Image (cartoon, rainbow, N blue to C red):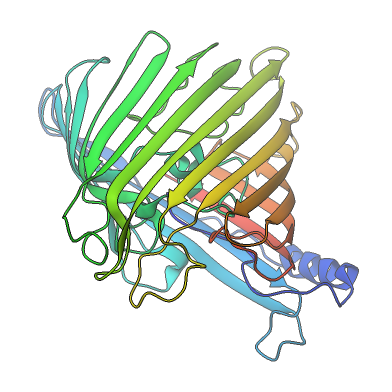
Length: 395
């Protein structure tokens, strides 16, 4: 899961929001999406072996009130948030390899996202070895491309999403065993987690996710998740539990502490009408609890890997209208999040938005307005308002 936050700049509500809305709409209206010819394909090597190549991009126009460098004017920025390349290969029916890259925010080096060998023996038991997603809550297992809302990263995240000392983009080096039995799905793994700093004992991080599908089964690669299927899988009701822990997973080289966390998440998708011409109601909710011996609000401990301590929750609701308007359908949504650290004030944020869904998660547009002081740290920031218009395409 990569931390992509539209409208993350500092903002106050002192200037009129209507003027900001009009300015944003004027810019968006002038942004045409040019047609282009994109190529992606699957190369057959033998009877069971093949290689495939794909790509994905997320880009947005972001307007932040009082977000200009002078602190008085509104900022207006175009931001390439993710540039991603996908490479998959299959040696035979049970052995494969995956290598994916990402240039997050479009202004840094190209990083390795995934690099793993996949032993996939049966639906019940599979093993991935290398660099991969650590089993976690739904929003971290979605990544930015398979979320319901554009700004899903306004909650504290697990250690592998904390900037490099314990993994990046929700990924870490390790091994995961995963599979499913009936409507039960599981993923259990061991990873490097925090290396150095507080982890003087060189302990491993242990991570697990368990989910039960009460209605139709979710369908994703491996143990990954999505926050909406746009009605394509029928009625869904899935309850998930994720857990992570690491001894000496927080702190500094001179003062180490432990980390543990758990999350309960729920996804419900209800289809009204016949498939292909149905309205779809999607509800997503999550409760997260972290216990970290050293936190962001702790007294300075030198070079510290400090995490959030406390609890957090969010709830989202969306409705996909059945009528096509042009090449796509409209899906308005609302999302509310509240973060409650144990050693600081609580914060919250509300996001109102609409997705224009052209081809599921492979092609969609988004317009959203967000207001509040919650952010990815879990600790209250400035009370901000922002608007963004985003474009997402995958091939």
